[in-house]
Length: 219
Image (cartoon, rainbow, N blue to C red):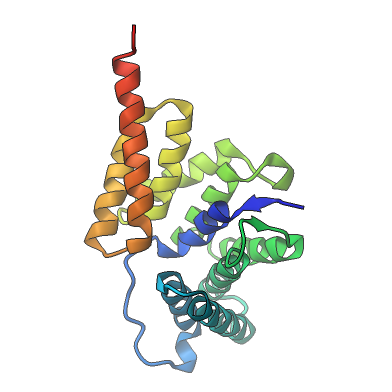
């Protein structure tokens, strides 16, 4: 049974790339969440499936170790969420594992339960709410509020800007969507977030074209 598109899961897990990638340094016991998140980031940047899989599996293992070592760490749960989400979308065009989806969402919700102000988790949650069908817990209004909060308080939040721009574009707020997509593109280019550049370019072109159509409708 098809439940979610590959693209949607990519947006969900994409909350892990809100901010520019940072250098994690040498592995150490005290930095397990960072190590797990770095594996998720490296996996998304890899070009071949086997390398991506290896990074995400290692990231999952490190995330599970981080959660086991410090269950009360929001970063640990979010890092595990990131890798679980990427593993779910690794193959094929649809997600068929309800269990996998529930586990992923559990880690995200636990991160926010521990730290309600966790910016990356808020962005991912907002994206989930605006994109998921209501049957699976989607809530466009609540999701939009979360995304607006992230955009306001996280100047470098790329994924949140893209997710919110899509909502506004679908609603007909094309000029507002253009601004957000343009900001997201500039941030992605400035901070070398290559995975976001094609998305931002496509969305900016779409919003611009729609805005022109509204302003100059054909007679």
